[in-house]
Image (cartoon, rainbow, N blue to C red; front, top):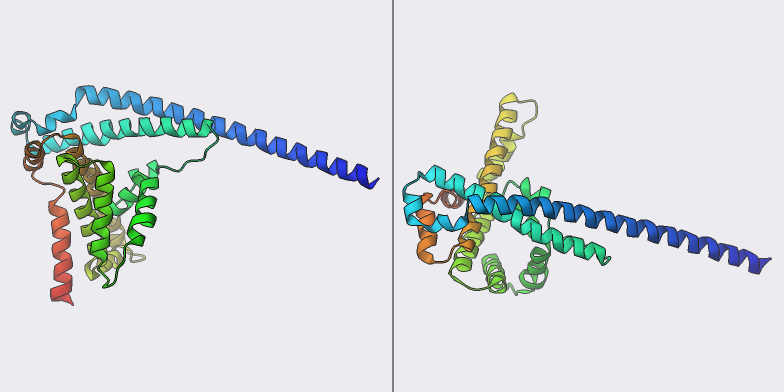
Length: 273
């Protein structure tokens, strides 16, 4: 009787495991199908946008000089933010579908978190999560920091990321801009000016604070999302001259707010405190 009970228990356990394995396989198949559908949509949008708004025009001085800086910024938004991003997500979703078919779980990016990010730090942490984790754990946290030089560890990590992506005029400018954006964001968020802004817009039972809250976060979202395409545009251009033409004819629109953030941080340190 005991032997029969053990056999029945083993059979029941095997049935549960088979059922769980079947459900897990079905879930993996649905994930793969969803990734393939997403890849098809992103690929179609990216291909159409790239044909009508090629990014190479953004280094053509004749094209840039004949348009206003606002139109150049709009062209950058459509070409890079929509076209280039959809192309990247097309490739990543194909990779994700392949991983699911092989039974491998993957957490490469956070599309929704990236689209709703309101500062450059969140943008970078959600853009390519695997590379971000690797840079943080293997590079940033492994550098010695004897004198509390956070900036040294920070820029060394960006330099390693630059080398990993490939060294060239376009990548040097791109990663210089990204590192500057992240550095300025971190500095400003540690200032008392930033804390006072947060305290004001989060006041309870205040209609003015509520309005300012939504205005502040809309501006922050727009600046962060445009910064994504603005700083990434240089990566697709070929020459330093072409990159400078792009920056000049868009009036350095995403760099100036970062300079303002550093200026406010300096005022906070030198004057207010």
